[in-house]
Image (cartoon, rainbow, N blue to C red; front, side, top):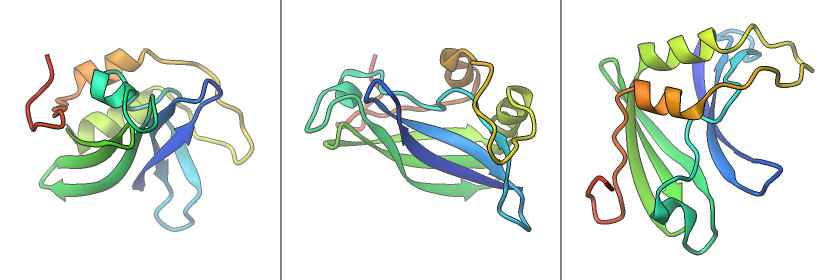
Length: 130
């Protein structure tokens, strides 16, 4: 399948980064991560020109590692990384095969996804925030 990173505006107004697995032949959603892959957490992700925003800007695959560039608060650019295996394990373990009109069901702990994958988040100065 194909990994699709996308952003979504939630009901509370926050923009989050999300993940789906698409069928490589039809483009239909096979799996949809129930909870956001990345949410605005760091100060520079929550405060800026537009508050509480993270959105994917690009992805680069090198070996088994995906490097993601993402916008934060419409003012900063962040970087994150994860392995393809970790992402696939999370999206397939926390969802069932998606039906075209199915609503989201079970919620998962976002911190479990972010903390268990080898993420690297960099602040606007290129330094990992503490």
